[in-house]
Length: 472
Ligand code: PFF
Image (tube, rainbow, N blue to C red; front, side, top):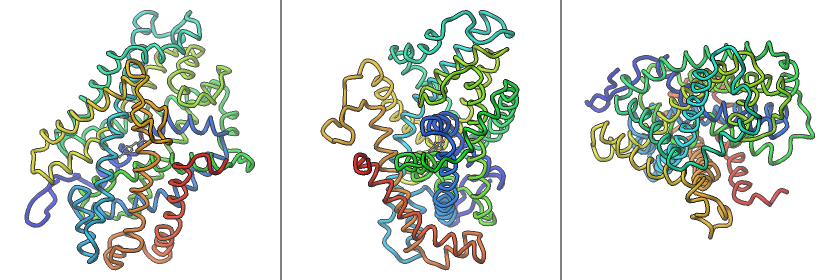
């Protein structure tokens, strides 16, 4: 749909449901399927999960609404949208720094996100090869020792060229859709892949539930043991809520920029965050029973999805098919998120330099390819290169971890903090009241969260992130 702005028309979502699907596509990704179960498993289950839900409600949802509100008011790229809200509120246009940092953060996350997207492609290839070699009936990788299956990931890490190639392939898919535009590309990928994703997730969860370890999973994920709710667990939960809802990187400002005036942002934001949280919980209910049923540990952290789970598929009848479908599903979710990440800097380039969309998207993807290649090589050829060794927070870390650390520990929380301060304290009250779609006490409660709860929580995340030893 073309949105009119100052006499010019701009590509936009064709309907409210298209926006909801695309925003859910951005939110639902590796964060839900890979990071959430890994964090929940490593942080003791129920305490993490329940605190996570609280964070989504009290911090994530209010910021999500603030971001979409800025975008919808501005109808432009993220920095320009912030400037327009600032202008309408008669405050400094320098607030656009919050979105400029977001553009940078989105670009950096895109670079390493597509590296992990490449790992997903690798596993799709492995399961396909297994089906060709041994058919569809048996478990995955039948007859191969557990160590060999768990070594698939380190083997991939040992092959720099393959990692760079797979990263380029995943980035290429992402570029294809972003270059085609908002309604013709980004919306298209969300419209087809998100429903397919949901069907696969539910089907695999139901299938896994018959494996017998479902009740063990439910009690693990939802039993609240207060003594497990330590400082680091709380911090992990808040950080995860932000990453999962795509906040603090101007992503939802950018997507909000394509939303029509008639859309109620309050209810839409509630739908997006509920769907994202539901998928994270379903991912836990999907992965843990399979892992428990195979008698394996859920506390493997990042290795849970890429090492423990493939091993668990070995124990499962038709495990190779289920494994293939599982990784295709992860690939869909990751692609709709990487598309959002590429769109943020692309929209900015279009606005700033008036480049046409395919050129803007290609420039950003080219840059992300270079950073991504360095990130991929930090697992092998460049393993000894620690670019920020002189900064204690990043000492001893390879390039992949540095990109992750700068965005998760600094750029995302700072971006979200500035968003909360801007909307809570500086933006024109009338503008905000009119546009947030909330009424009565809900409106007041939202304002209270944005003004007080979000800034305090975000300052906490920043301090603990920068000085990790402080609360030990
Ligand atoms: N929310 C995505 C996930 O959970 O995988 C990651 C992400 C996508 C972060 C888009 C930021 C963003 F703009």
